[in-house]
Image (tube, rainbow, N blue to C red; front, side):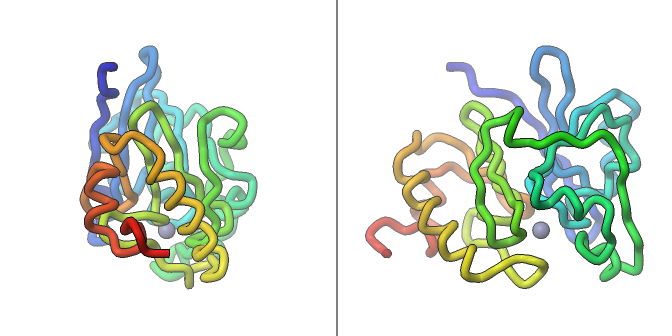
Length: 196
Ligand SMILES: [Zn+2]
């Protein structure tokens, strides 16, 4: 199988969010557009997929020519509430009122509550977009509108998932480096084999 092509852009300034770009059948898709995304994408119409609703992953929405936004039902209200998307921490009141759709109905997702209640892993072919739930060497924090207890359950569930998929699949997190599932299991203390 030919691996799907994607590009990654660093957005949201010093926070350095990974914004992903790929095409399916000539349509352009963006995952987690941080601010500054426009300089990479321009005016082309895009579909936007969101792993969750935090400000550094959605701040670029207003820069883009957005056709529709796919987000979980639980995190949807973060688009319209600065207190829930945490833009107020950056001295902003970010809201987005566009055409939103329930991501679970259109894409292959895994529910991973913890970092936020509506966080999703998005799985497209051999690519696993993990947002701020899983990084190559760590997991996301749960003190920005999330839940530690839920995160524990999520990690348990994801161990099963990662141990049973092709190890060449790629982990594409919301920040930091990209790695293979093989590397994740080797490097990330939360997903080491043998540990419960
Ligand atoms: Zn986040």
